[in-house]
Structures are given as structure tokens and as C-alpha cells.
Length: 170
Image 1: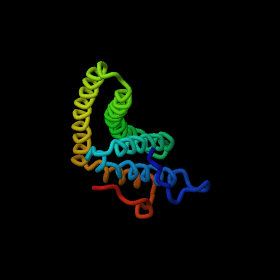
Image 2: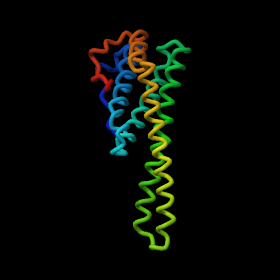
Image 3: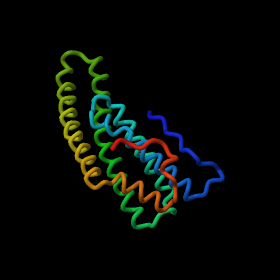
Image 4: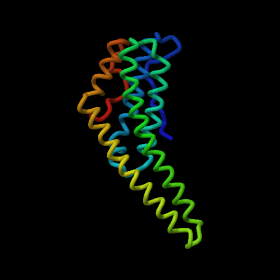
């Protein structure tokens, strides 16, 4: 599983809004750091790490919801949930294919065609999910969601983004 990035500058004495901003922006950047690997599709662990990071981001947003205006918070959370859901569908297929490949190794030759057929179907479904993921990222880029999201968090928490973890890929 992907190791969570350390949230810099948060302690037991941190103000709620400051902790909210630092945590949410760090989780956002952590999640987006896996974008290129997820899009490339060469390593299923990249997608897995991105999905885990997206779930961390959602949990952080839920924990710090009180730092943000309700309407804009819901709108931004909906986008993050879309990311998690889209990645989840692809991840489920990756896990199923891996499980079936392991299962197939121990089957008799007579059972192999059925499992191979199912693997082929899941791989085709996974290719369709790859297209959904690419469209999701294209939509986020088109809408300039990342920069807007970071400005929104900064506006409501006052966090100095220069003191956070590195920026995600553009």
C-alpha cells in the first residue's frame, strides 16, 4: 500500500483551519503524484496507490468539513468522490484479473479455457475503465480543478502552499 505523505507543520497545537488546509492539500498532492503512473497503466500498483490516496483525501475532507462553506465543500467533495469511484472500478478489475491468474496456475488444462475467457473479458472491461480514467483526468485539467481546488483550500484556511509537499504533476 502507498505510504501516506507526512503532513508538514501540523501538531496538537495547530489551529483547526491550518491543520485542515495542510492536511487536505498534502493529501491532494499525494493523490495526484500517482496520476502519470495511473494513466500509463504499466503498473497496477500506481492505480492502487492513487485510489488509496484518494480515500485518504476524502477522509481528510470529511474530518475538516467545518473549515469550509458547505456549498463549495460539497461541490469539491463530489469531484474527489468521482476520482475515487472511477479508480475503484478499475482497481476492482485489476484485483479480479490478478486473482484469476493465480487461480489459473493451479487448474487442470480442461478448466483453463473458461478462466482464460473470463480474464480476457475483465481485461477488456479494464481497457474501458482506462478510457474513463483518461477522460476523468482530461476533465479535471480542462476545468483547471487542481489549481482551483488548491486556491479554494488556501482561501478558506490561510495555508501557505509554499511550505507544503511538492506540487503534483501539471
